[in-house]
Length: 243
Image 1: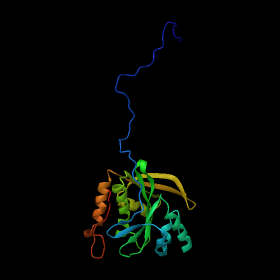
Image 2: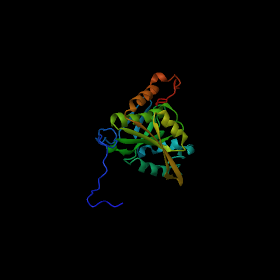
Image 3: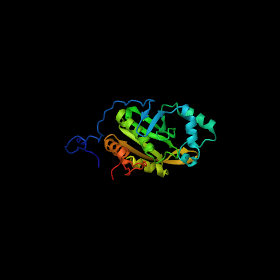
Image 4: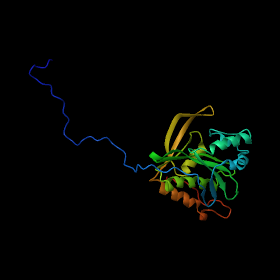
């Protein structure tokens, strides 16, 4: 039907009501967080030392007989000391990731390393990763405290809002460690990376600043002297996340 010559088309009108504002996230402090520095961190059972070539011989010794420990890392195992030393020399000088050697007080020897990485000061996000512990140190009080020292440094000292843990989705021990430390599972990125010629799906976990005090207190309570008997065995288990 045609419009009569003297008629003007009328625009559709919306019913009266409040303005339609899009949903937005909560406001946060946008101040960029400080970068981590190459400084030692000392705990009750372990000391973290800025990783350097001086650790090469001790760490090479720690890698012996640890073939399976490299399965989900992007490097290793190493053919000989020269290859390992070359890797360590480069790895120790990067600023992201920034690495620490792990020296348990019981042995007095460097038995692993770990890093802070994917550092995003503007987003207040940081990741705990590149964790390699020798079989001698795995599942020990020193191993838990080593991770806790950097978690606490990132969240309490530097004030980051988001602490990330990610791993190969097939890496069951890493997933269990994330849950034990109180990280919340976020999901998977499918076909995220290619590592050693194989597809890697990546599982993501995080702790946010509002969750951190409860997680921190649970880990600190587990690490307390009174939780360990005279043989150094924990009296209680640790699962920092509720539920």
